[in-house]
Length: 127
Image (tube, rainbow, N blue to C red; front, side, top):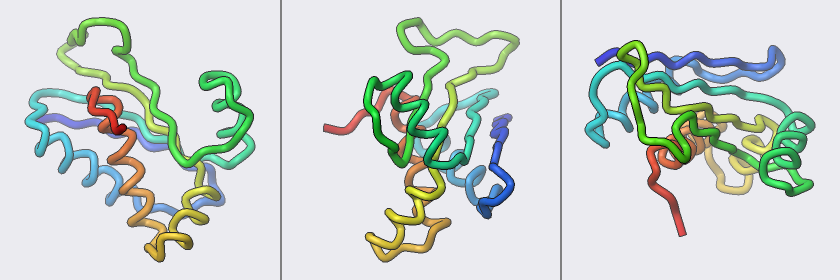
């Protein structure tokens, strides 16, 4: 299995890229997703997250995670033998607040939210 996880992190935020990629790989294996897959992850600030929330969710608020499917409304197809599932965007300041509230390590909260976003990209939604 070839898994690509391009990760963009605004320079002032410290995250474990290795743990993020491992979280993605573990969940794809658990869900029996095989072949070549690409999921991008971006770690941004509250201001940018609020802009995305306004633009795509029509809500004027920041949030901890957003997922943007590359396949929404279409049948999943492989182009160039690569399944491009989409993008997961996290607000790092919100992650810090959530981690403190939940008494978790920040890296563990990042991984929890990456997994949550990836589940949405796979079409598995919560109530």
